[in-house]
Length: 412
Image 1 (cartoon, rainbow, N blue to C red):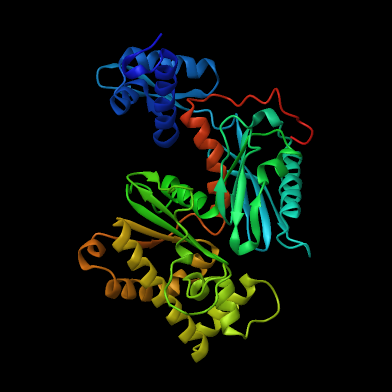
Image 2 (image 1 turned 180 degrees about the vertical axis):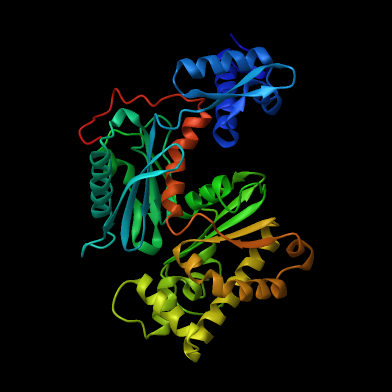
């Protein structure tokens, strides 16, 4: 049967389930009466949908509240303890794998350093699969309880054709030497769980918009400053992807024509001046160790008043401010959120300089309506954001559980 606008009754039912489930997830607990007011669904539709979701075990009753002169209202919420989510952050020096419940409570996590094989895609896939098996084993989590595995990667992601079970996922990571890497196929050899892969900056952006400093904004940019630099552009509440899902490569916008060589091969990229790898390299006085130790040492030197360190960070703040001014002029966001482990480490010191530079470089009118803030979800927000990929699919489908009957469950 077909409803209005060509939608089938099944489509309308799924849409109603998704609407109610999303409201309960983000705004619950709520009563049926509150759901009706918030969703615009009739009392009968709310009753039918919540009855289905209760029968499916996707939501649960959680007490009652009094009402003016009437019977107490039963409160409903998402059954957060029933399912699990996996988030993976493929970083520059390690792979982080974490298991969450639906409330984003981290149940187990593991950091797996890249070996001397470095960023070899096969090696990265092996680490992801090893980390996945480890967190499931440590928590005794059955594969059937996992809604999916979300992976944030440093690159542009082609999703492949629908219905290919992730086999068509291909990653183009120019800065890390990944040229059309079939990551979906590599991961599918070791797990039958549903796979969701996206650019790390985009997963960070979704997390901050849903749960962090971007919540409530309709137009925003969430910037990731780590070893490299990226951004997630939010236009009217939705992530802007562009023609080939490569929108947001902010780190490769040009701030100095003919300037420093960037990891991408071009010259004068923003990343070549403000990325952690570039800052530690330019300082040239970092102790042995990883980038995080080097950047922390640079920050400590600046706090101690060492001129070279102070000058380098002041320059980085100006470059970031100029880059943010470009975002303001191009996209007219109401909020710019700076995240990523390096962005949060340097943010408290650099933020005044960033704001001052943005004030000078941006057009006055749009800048007056923009707010520059630091992310609130911490340095592991890419992992949290990656876990929102299967969560988003679950909510958008109205709680439809993934069908894995035709997939191998050799490792999960």
